[in-house]
View 1 (cartoon, rainbow, N blue to C red):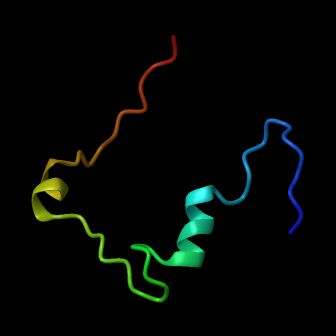
View 2 (tube, rainbow, N blue to C red):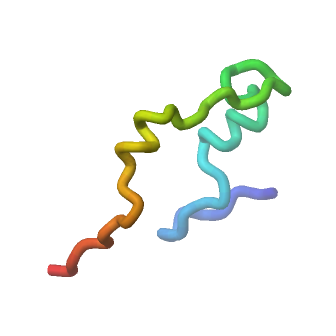
Length: 55
């Protein structure tokens, strides 16, 4: 894929996405991503997220 010129449109992949493809999620190619939400964080995450109001 050739790079597109900067024209205000976000690229398909970020630098982090490219690094994860090459190095894996923790810098180990082929290793599974061990990140998960712990029960306390899941409990504290609101179920209904208010999108807010426009000014």
